[in-house]
Image (cartoon, rainbow, N blue to C red; front, top):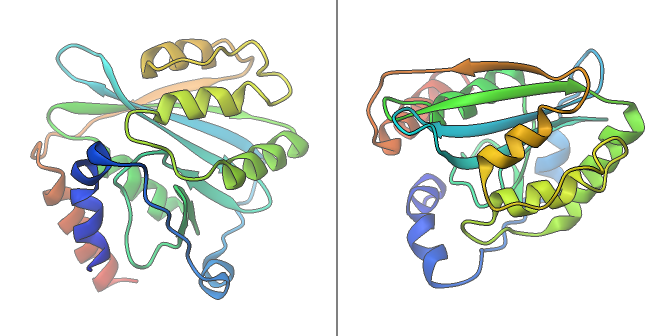
Length: 204
């Protein structure tokens, strides 16, 4: 089955059963590993409805020994981006922007909260998401808040089902910088997925 087609139909499958396990080969993960310059950091993404401002999804970028994207119960993905149970590897700035753009459209915008953390904290976050396993549908914020609460300096975070609540809690971390990203393209995610695929195929 084509990877992109699977990702776009995944919500229907997940509604009926547990989250599927995805496990990219070692050599693929190693070949795509990306180390980002600068301080170690965590970046929380909250996808919000442009009308009601209600949160719909939570994702987390971890810049540790390598930079990965944790998209629990998410639908983002591509054949060229190795994934292991919601953890996507090789997250260059270009791939990060693809992720943000994929979720931002006429009906949703992305709130981006970035904070620098000690290397040990980033390393622990990376290990915890790698050990988490696949996240069932609708539990993206539950799993993200539960993981964050295990990190030094984030112990005040309480497990929550609601993306906005987690974003509000995350905002209390000293040094958090917040911005928003908006687009006005179609509400159909398949349009964004096709555009991303075309860009990757043109310039891998």
